[in-house]
Length: 127
Image (cartoon, rainbow, N blue to C red; front, side, top):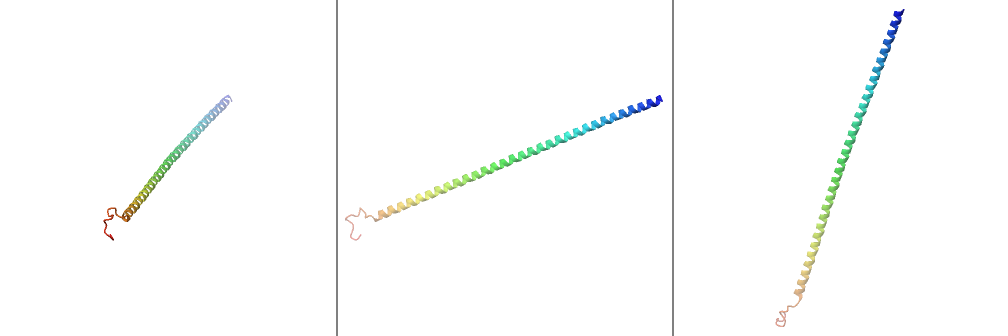
């Protein structure tokens, strides 16, 4: 009877040890799962950070392209303004040349219509 009680006690201790080992394994598995979840969260955070960095880089490139386009448009407007000023200067020069030509023609006509001072009384009649 005592031997049976000792065997039962030994069996009970063995079951308790096995249960403790099982509990320990379960706790270790839970810790491993928690570690895996933390690693996955860290990886997700890293991916999100990379995506954010790429988006910021893309926005920076887009901003640079827009600035270059703005500079190109401003340069084009400056060239157009310079061409307009050149055209205005050309028109001004042409107007001055036409005015000088008209003045020369008027002076020449005026000089041709005046009687010659060298003629005086010595000019033949009708001449």
